[in-house]
Length: 260
Image 1: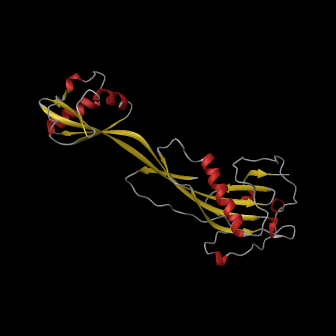
Image 2: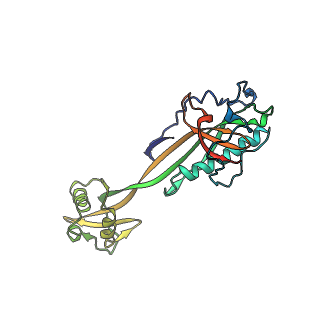
Image 3: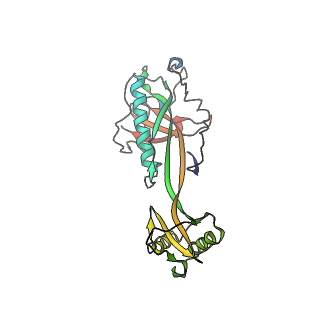
């Protein structure tokens, strides 16, 4: 898997590398042709099954279809890859997760036992994104307090706080907007600000006779994710190899499904 984590305000694009030689990935369906190579033992449904068969990941999406219908095979792989990544790669603890969306890049029938049902190789490219709040930023600037309120004196803040009173004093002295990241003390800062008057999410404190408005702003990490998976499917087993290199072979991939 390739991951790139970047701030939400920074754009980026995914650089896609070549696919495996044994799993052609033509993007134009009209150019797709059946492979002319001879199958290995694991390509054919009547070959000796792996020692750890039967096995399943239990994703509830069925089993590789025994069919000559390319569209049905590709639909199955897209559903299986979605379930697999949701179970193994997606961080469901993130504040927001974008759609896990597989795109089939190519599929090739693998001859075996005189039938196209000997198997398929299918390559899928899947992208999704995740966002999470990783830090809190403190923003302080001189401001007029709400009418009829008394701003919280900075000297009344808890002695253990350092960043908050420093930022308030700096903003009051400079007359400028001051921004600072909060790390371990963000919850303590929230508790201290609860005693200050508030308007539209801004709390008001006073330092050396100058009122300062303080706002807490979330810093969001945005991670774009991309995975290319190469599948080998027969009516009795499914293997999956992951990677962007030219030497990725689904016949050597992890065995995820197998039935005797």
